[in-house]
Length: 148
Image (cartoon, rainbow, N blue to C red; front, side):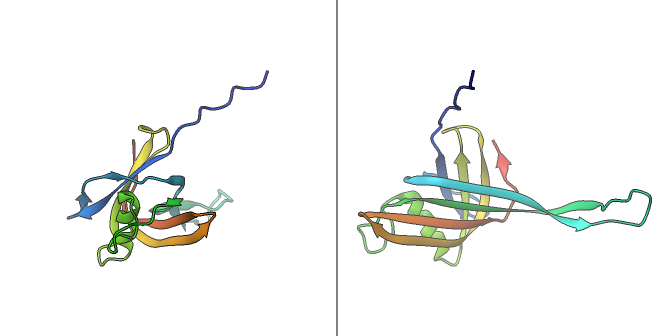
């Protein structure tokens, strides 16, 4: 008998501007279709010639990339790139002298996810296809993620 399919959960993400090193007020990022999170450690070769016959590595600094994409909601006002507060927070951080944001991503809708402070590396808007614009944001972690 085949296994039952896994439950489908809504992907939920929130973003907050960095205020003196702490998250400001979180707002939802609406229209989010995909989130890709990849933490990794930098490995340093610590091999010495002994009897092990294998390389030895030490995990040093931790790094993480976060990319997000979804349907873009163009802003009606001249000073708002997006009508969605979350999308606008990402773009505003990217285009400002203070590009830091705090991001929360929940894979199960409200629990089971992470929170992390990031710098917005890029924010891209793709031309409309059948009237639908797409946005993509690339972020780099500046702190370790806190899993919740």
